[in-house]
Image 1 (cartoon, rainbow, N blue to C red):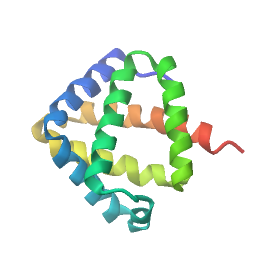
Image 2: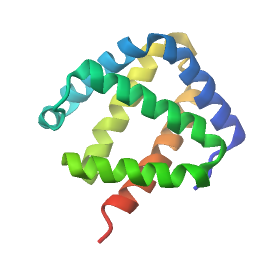
Image 3: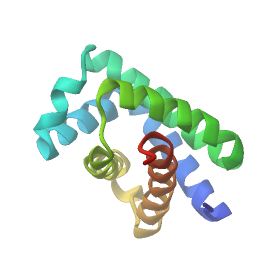
Image 4: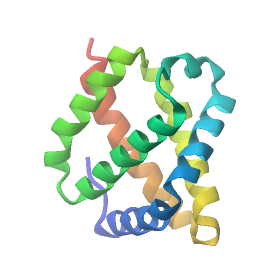
Length: 138
């Protein structure tokens, strides 16, 4: 479970670019997510505005936590536990990851390069792997 320092830097810098448009980014994310998988919409009981604020806050914690992945693991485990309680399944990580990548692509515009995309793919893969391994142990 590793990412390079360059990938950490790219993810952290690109997230800093998206933060000022956090509300729009969250709107893009949920619109895209429900287009990719409409069956996920009933999992969201709160207003999407409130949910979007939680999404962006959680992303910030994860992005800042990239400097110490070992310390991030227990946070991801708690997040996984909450998501299982909401009714999330392992298969749901794919549309979520795809919606996140689309959101970043739209939000970053010309700053969305193949290198930035790959950094986000690798980071999301680590996060999803840790969460799924914890939540869906068999």
